[in-house]
Structure formats: structure tokens, C-alpha cells
Amino acid sequence: MNTGKGLRLGDLQLRILRILWRHHEATVAEVMAKLGRASRLAYTTVATMLRKMEARGLVRHRVEGRTFIYQPLVGEAQVSRKLTDHLLERLFQGSLSGMVSHLLSTHEVTPDELAKLESLIEERKRAR
Amino acid sequence: MNTGKGLRLGDLQLRILRILWRHHEATVAEVMAKLGRASRLAYTTVATMLRKMEARGLVRHRVEGRTFIYQPLVGEAQVSRKLTDHLLERLFQGSLSGMVSHLLSTHEVTPDELAKLESLIEERKRAR
DNA sequence: GCAGTAGTATTACCATGGTAATAGTATGTC
DNA sequence: GACATACTATTACCATGGTAATACTACTGC
Image 1 (cartoon, each protein chain N blue to C red):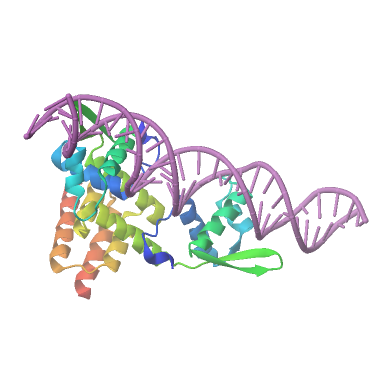
Image 2 (image 1 turned 120 degrees about the vertical axis):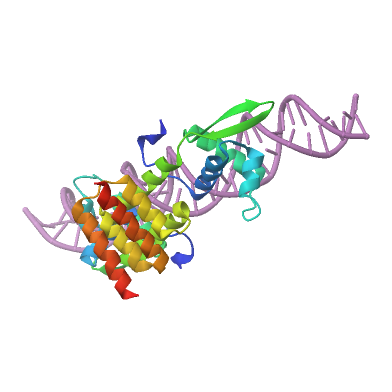
């Protein structure tokens, strides 16, 4: 299975996964279209990437006529979790407050965002 | 210059940088020692990595006798920032509260941590 | 002065992400 | 039936991270 190691995910792979998450399934042409305009990738580039992703167990496909229809095999939550945790470990030795502290100190935060954060923490306090 | 693109940083590279940050400078042997025990890497592996990192502008070296003494050229804050921002964009479309929310909902948080987070936010509110 | 030791230099190899060209194949259209 | 079209299949190439062997070189201790 894939999830043995780091679940390293390139940018393109993540963008493709995002499309598959949103649409549940998609053909190469559809994925390319959704990626498209901005990043003018060749059809075969997208196809190859999907192929590689399938080899890694990130997606699978079924055949309809002579067309491959791809579906994600990993969930968004799962991926977010893996990637976030990886960074959390790598940079902040797993310290959640360390990471949040860093986030706060390196970004403008609107009062709105602050309020949202506050209520997240409140909620969390009540939940325990 | 390096900072043109993503500042992609492998795990080993980050571990090496961490050592250099802590010690300000170090020889290959020292870096290897600090990495050591756990990850039994060959001397030449460390040397090669440092070499590659130098080529990318992450570190530089001066010569003392016939020994290279390496120093970091990128700061910890800079690196943390780049990597965190990258993930923030990649996964949460730049939404800080989105990321924090994810962090909170996927991890056990001790009351202690919660308090710390709360005071971070308080502090931040006062600061604006 | 010679052997070991501690360095750097060179070269190599693998995996993977990204990008794509080229080739093959089936299908629908005039 | 020939042709364009729309697919998949195969192959290739580059960069980079990681890992290391091998080779060269200079110093150190006897």
C-alpha cells in the first residue's frame, strides 16, 4: 500500500486530487480542463500523472468504452492530516501552539479571523 | 539565487539546517555526529548533501586547514515561513483559521496547550 | 619515510515529480 | 473505406533529494 511512507505529494498531484475530490470522478480530459487555462499542461502530461498516481495507490480508474474514469482513493482529510502532521513534526517538533504561534506571528490576521480562532478555542475548551 | 522557487527542502536538508542553526557552524564530521546514531549515514552522504545545499545557496563554507566549515545561509524563520506558507496555500487556500481549525480537530490538545493558544490570541487582539 | 587517518572531489545510482513526444488503437464521419 | 479524432501505451528526459562508493590528497604518528 502507499501509506507506508511519507505520502509525499507534489503540487500537481494535489491539484489533481482536489479536482477528483470535488467531482468524485473525472476523465483525463475533464481533469485537464479543470486544471486548465492557467497551467497549460499537455493532455499526456495529465494522463501520465494520473497513471503514476494510480501506481502509488492515490487514485484508481474504471473503464467506460475506451475512456478511463478516475476516482480518488485517498480522502481529503487523510491527506490534509498527513501533510500537516509532517510539517508539524518537521518544523515545530509536534508543538501545536508552536505552529499556531508561528502562523499568527507571520500573518496579518483580520479581527474577523481572530474572532473565528477565539471561538474555535472556546469550542474546544467546552468539548473536553 | 535560490529563493526563486519553492524552497523545497528535504527532510535530511532540514535536519542539517537545524544543526547549523543551533551551532552556527559545523564541519561535515560534526554534522554527521549530530545527525548520527539514529540515522547511520555515511560520511560522504553528509558531505555530498552539504555540497548540494551549497550549490542551492542554502549554506556556505569557509576553509580551515583542509576542513570545510559550513554555515547556514538561510534563517530558521525564513524557512519556517516558506514551508508553512506553502502548506497554508496548498491545503487551506491561505485560510489561517482553516488551518488552525484543522490542527485543533485532528489533535489532542492538553488544557495547557489550549491556555497557551488562548493567550496567543489574546495577545494578538491587544496588539492590533 | 611510510601507513593510517581524515579530509575533499568525483562519479554513480535510484526514486519520484513533472513534462511531454511519439506511437498505437478504436471510433465516428463523410 | 479513408481520415480525422480521441483515447491509451510506451518511452524519454530533466531536476532534485538521498545515499554512497571510489579516488585523490594531505597530515600525523611511529
